[in-house]
Length: 212
Image (tube, rainbow, N blue to C red; front, side, top):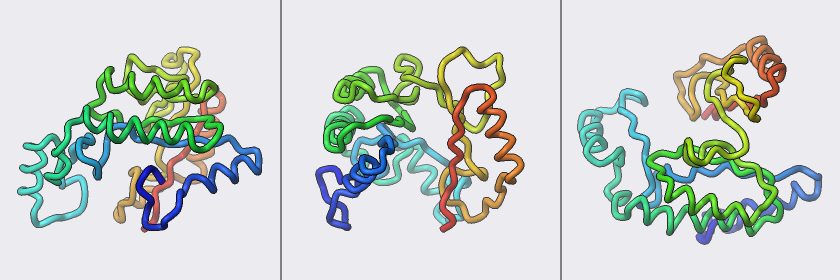
């Protein structure tokens, strides 16, 4: 996957794309275009350690990330955000839009520290897939995409403006794994949400985090 093979040694997306073509399923990709905890220059949305698990080094870590725009690894600050967009994000998005046939959806996310000049470079690549649908998370408000994505809420009728939308909502309270979060929505709540959203013309992709 990408230009450096993963430990698996193979492109993980090619069999997915092939299966979608075989069974007539539209292919879509999720892509976090700015926030990156691995490549130098990627943005980080800083979180205090108190939002995670107990850590004896919490004070030292919090002081470091506060002084380094959220980063905890010195290697992450060896490139600028502009370098990251040019060296990582643009090549990756180009690869996604050229190597796997027709792509129906590109779901942007976490536009931390995005600027219009960065977003324009990524938006220009969408011409590689003229029929593609994208959301509103590339860079608000100047890159609205094709549909809105309210998060953890269902808009009321007065908030809807006729544009397509989908509510992004977790099935408990967190987006990733959190061993202490057992606040799962009941089947009744999930069905009620689905009916409410569908009745207003929206889409409901509930997010289920891993158990471990």
